[in-house]
Image 1 (tube, rainbow, N blue to C red):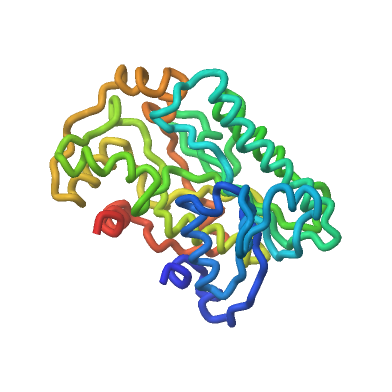
Image 2: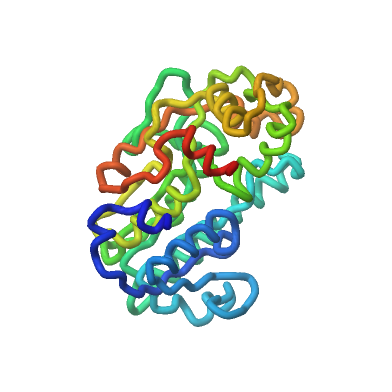
Length: 314
């Protein structure tokens, strides 16, 4: 299972240990949260979700606020309103929701960790590669500058700052994720129908970079981050494959489906649907490499785009 595929060879050989892990709210039952929960449980861990509603294996935000953080070995925060929902207009109200869904939940969890009598060994936050400025020439690793040029990069900076804990009693890890590919959700969920109908193609010019990761590897990197005591700091949650452009992704996705993929989605349409500021996330991209992620010993299940897409559409 993915548990073994997305881990270091040392992890595969060692006995599994039960650990208590706490998810953030909406992320716990969402696309990434579901994959991570399944992987952690498969590796013998006990998972507690932080949720708006009470239930088995859950605590509510109210309980977290009043009773504090339950004893756990690691806390993982996946919360955040979907920025690229085509059903939401990019206005001031939605921008505030995007900010609050990330910053407020992160601050609540960080405060709970800081006040805990026995804080968790690891605190992991998932943000995004929007931290890095779109470019057709620059290459970014985890030490590259960014986070100060538009709404989304500044959001990542505020988000990561909100998660920062004083002291060194808890390991802190930030995973900056690329576009997540997987069955039943993420980017593929929006693209599958037009591509199956032979109506897919590159977005805008198509030459913009397209940093991506398979859902199994994102869950694997997060699991690696909570299990491996040497992992710390920023990790880029992207595939190590040779650089992929949006046009190359469209061609590979069409090939995986056995369909043509040459009908471009014009930039003006993207801007009309998402708004000019949000459209930048689709029309421009970054060349992001997971240098530190690989250096920690993480072994990818899907390092190449073709194999990743074949698994997604199988």
